[in-house]
Image (tube, rainbow, N blue to C red; front, side, top):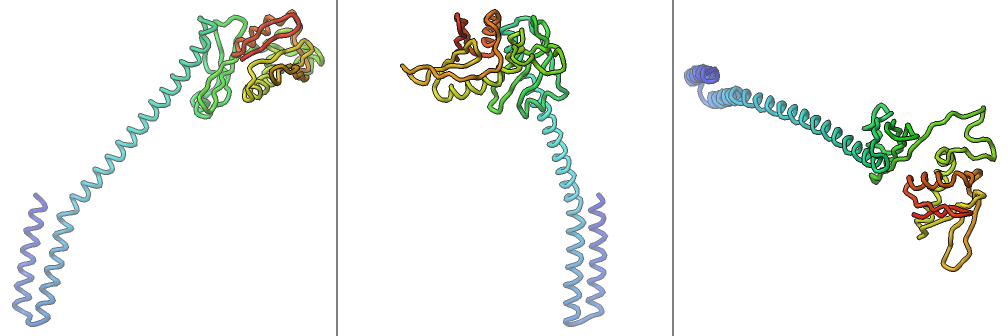
Length: 255
């Protein structure tokens, strides 16, 4: 209603101004003033009529942007929650294959950040005999692995086992020394077409360079579990995804 009243009032003013110009002026001056009067009136009308529509469109765009931001934030939050649940299910499935009663929880403050960046994170496990922790490794390709961890107190001032002696628990030996050496060596051999190696009693590792040739042997470990612990060591290697077979004087490992 207000725009109609304003338009009517402006029309009355325009008519009065036109009559005054026609009555008082003649010639070029009259024409210029008439054109200027109509131009100013037309500009005022356009601004008066378009300003409410412009404001309405601006408010509408702001509401749309706000609604879109809220929707994106909600969708992002749901996606993060879905991603975390997906990884949780994968970890649970991995553990329950070996330990059907296994339960666990994250030990890091922000597991979502770990899932996004990848790497290795620790979890607390329950219902798993002889173990209280596990390390979850998630690489950039999305591959997930779990390694059981047993934390044991270190005796004396040094770290790990005394020099020249292997820890009595093969899982501890594997975490302290075996994992780093075997992971690197298996990856190298596998990339070159090999599928097996031999762990010898003296801590050396042998593998077959080619069919019919003698095995290549190199010193790999400073310590190695005694024979009495080889069955337990084989179990540890099997849990790591390798296939270990205990022989009289060595452990055959394949993948």
